[in-house]
Structure formats: structure tokens, C-alpha cells
Length: 360
Image (cartoon, rainbow, N blue to C red):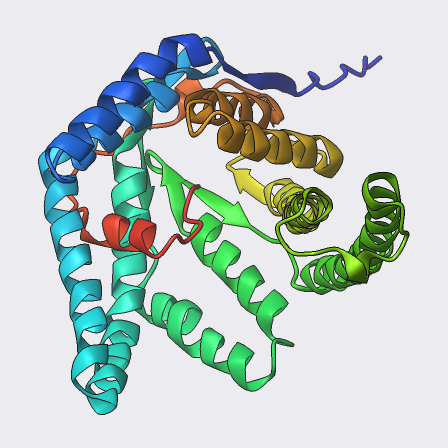
């Protein structure tokens, strides 16, 4: 007689974020003041303090993450980044041919910087003493950051979803936690579907914005001038200021909504198809909630002349972090550590200078 024993249910470990805007505000304020006072030199130390704060307040299974990047290495990387793009800017004042040559030079070195950036960020991130790692090849980096962008440009944007898919596959598929490698098995087809939906969303919201502004303009001018014709409103008048402000807010709302839609849909797809051994990931991020957080953060930051910025960062980090769930049969203690190495920060600083999305 045999007895069937049910397999143990996979253990679920939600992420948590324990930081607060009130605690982070003095750190942020100190970073801003010292960065300005030192003409940007302190910004490397400010970045290290900021990342350490957010990493250490991001917790999984009762333990926080940690950031090990040295400010001196970040400063050297920042100097190199500023020098590279400073030469590009100066080339524009000398000769168009020199500008083209500098663009070609930057395009040639950009994939190397990207690979170094991923490696530096991973190797300087740890959880429970185990560091992350990145082993993406330079060949794949040049394909993802040079070859595919060229194809996307030639195809008039039709290759952008495929390019985005390959970037995520390069980033997730070549990362590791200690000696255990991540895997990525997502297809490119969902990227095309998501981008197509985002295009329809952009068109729909754009039409709604134009119609809404027309109606709002008529109502505002009727209430303030007695005429329902917005074309008769003089620039600088109260009605003009209100309608112009509504147009700016509406435009920001449309852009934020599309960005939130792409981030949520692609993020959920990518993490649903990312594995770490037998461990899976679930990112329960929702586009409407992300849209509200981003838009209100932006508006409150503008209204408070930037003082709401640290609270906005914490608010967004809490939502993005606590939407993550790790699903696996065992804990994270089984993963074997990898000896730490010293990786330069040049790529990391250059990618941040270009405002690339390189967060893992």
C-alpha cells in the first residue's frame, strides 16, 4: 500500500520597504547642499549614500540588501563620463565632421560602458552577504546597444520592441546571485503586443486631451470673459494662463500614463519569465496605481519647488518594492556566495549620465 504525499507548496516571500520620507529627507537635503557647495564633487558620495539608504531599506525574508560601491570609484567614473560627453558637446562648436566623429566614437564605446555598468551595479549589490554578478559578453552588448538600435532606426521604429526584448534578455539572462545564474525565457511577441497597445493608448489619450482642452478652454473663457471662443483670449490673461496650465498638466498626464502602462506591462512580463534556479518572481505592479503615484509625485515636487522630491522617491520605491514577490520551494540561504571583485564604475556613471534605465 502506497500513500501519496503532496509536494510542499512553494514558499512565498514578499519584498518590503521600510524607509520613510521623513528619515530620508535630511539625507537628501545634505546631499543636495554639499553637492552644490563642492560644484558636484560630492555628488559621488551623495549617490552612494542614496543607494545605500534605499538598498538597506529594501528587505526580503527579514534581511535587507546592501550597496558596496565606493564613492571614489563613482567619482572617477563620473569624471570619465563628463569628459566623454563634454568632448562631444565641444565638438559641435568646432566642426560638424568632428561632431560626427565624436558620435561614432561614443557609439563605439557605449556597449562597453553598458556592460561595465551592469557588472558594476550587480557586483556592488548584495543580500545576506551574497553578491550579485553579471557576465554578459561584449559581443551581446555591441549587438544590443549598437546593432539593434541601428536596425530600429532604419526600420522607422518597427524593431524597437524586439530591441527592448533583447536588452532585457541580455540584462536578466546574464545576471547571477552568487554562483546561481538567473534565467530569462520570455518571447519577443508580447513586447510587440504591449507596444501596439501603448500606441493605441497614446492616440486615444491624445484625442481625449485635445477634445478636453477645447471644452475646458471654452468653459474657462466663457466664465472669465463672457465669450465661449478661446481664440479671442489674449496671451497673458487669466483665462490664457489657466488653459495653458491645463494643457501642460494634460500633456504630462498623457506621457506619464503611457510610461506607466509600458513599465507595468513589460515589467510584469519580464519578471514572470525570469528565474533563479527553481525560484520564480511575481511583480504585481498595476499601471493605474503607478500612473497616479508618478503624476502626483511630479506635481507635488513642482508645487513645493523640489522639496517633495525625497518623499516622492520613497513613495515610488515603496510601491515598486512591495509589488515584488519571490516564489520558491526553499529559502535564499542555499545560494552560494561568489568572491567579490573590484569593478570600475565608469560604465555605471556614463549610463546614468545618458539617463538609461539600467536598474535590475
